[in-house]
Amino acid sequence: MKAGDILSENSSRLIRDLIQDVTDDHLKVKKLYSYLQGRTRYFNIALGIGGLQPVDANVVDEVGYGDCKGLTNY
Image (cartoon, rainbow, N blue to C red; front, side):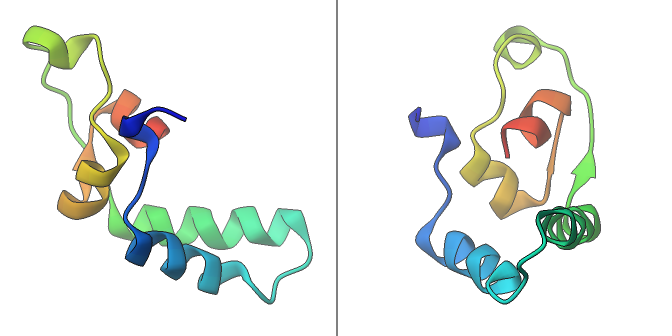
């Protein structure tokens, strides 16, 4: 795991709590997708390194938006 892939402990705990009682993997994904869809937005600025490297997952979590690579990394 790279440093850019790590979420804060609060965010990690919130996600674990969100799916802790769900046993079906399909329902886990559905809950996570719904949570992320309601919390994040997509944008694209392809200047400098932004076009080559994803934004850190922790930054996307804090600000609630990212480009396609940043959201995928998140």
